Image (cartoon, rainbow, N blue to C red):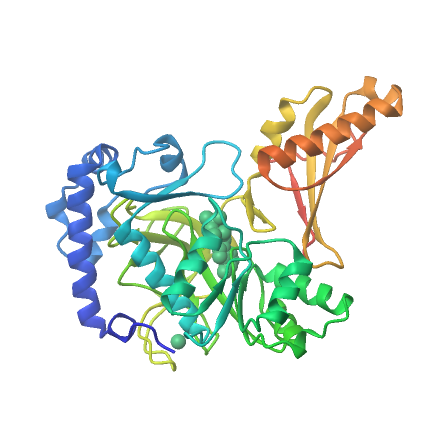
Length: 433
Ligand code: ADP
Ligand code: ZN
């Protein structure tokens, strides 16, 4: 099902003209309305009139996550605040969050992107879509919700968690499409079996899975466990949330909604644009966003772009399944976590040394499990076990409230965590995904 053939199947030349007109308009808007961007463009020595072709985008400055943090909360607003209808923020950041502020038109574009995404998975008004991404500031839940409403499906706004109820609702309401993280999809299948419910006996036939890295192997596992088609979907808060790119029935790369988001691949070291087919860092420019439009936002996600007419009929560029990131950001149960955030939280807790190791694994449950090994001061080890126990509880509570993730703390004696020369190794990722 192609939701919007006009844009999804547009001819290459026509699309380029549309993108150029939108890019010019964007740069003019940013230059005249957002002092942050005026300064950025001025110091790069470019003026909106210098954008004459799409290739000229390479002359424009990048935007990075820190720019968004430094301008928190409303420094990148490109419209009067009264026009803002809704605000979202990126998941799990301890420090300053990254904000996406949406006007009515921005919400409509978000719905459009997610309607295309769900249609890619074959969803129509005859479907019942269970949204098991978290609702709230996180963009996953509401993004999928808006898109499902747009295609006219019946929406079940479950949000994440409460597994027995997810299964009950799925069975009783005959859910046909689920939207959640891929690891949760596997976990749900296991739980269903455990509770005596055969996942294959349910009406579920498709799932839109994203917000965290996964693999072809996981796709096979999910499809086999549920007897469904599993589709990879991609998005990020900064650009709009989910609905930026999605797989069609070919399951061979994710179609980018190029009329809304202009993709580039760059060499992460030099910042130079790379040709199609070459692996590098994905960069997005929002072409029509009104609230917080972004110029050449560096996603830190690694992939490559392919172009041409897909067997599904769409002509939009595709990005390959993500290979990883150029920074050290971890995605733990869908929550974005930087090791530095754990470090900052630890420093404030008395009795610990800033020597720690994060060990990630996926156990039987298929969900991410985190062990945080922390070195404690010598005195504490000679002390009673009670104070060790309370320190452990305290660290777990602090991490839960500051990072939004549940982890197990293991206190270790001083100097037991291996020291490395140069950059400390803070993460051991044993997750087989
Ligand atoms: P969300 O988790 O809603 O997609 P966030 O802004 O919290 O949005 O996180 C965005 C990041 O999540 C992306 O930059 C990417 O690293 C990761 N991500 C999102 N979708 C996928 C996907 N399908 N595969 C791999 N990683 C993904
Ligand atoms: Zn396709």
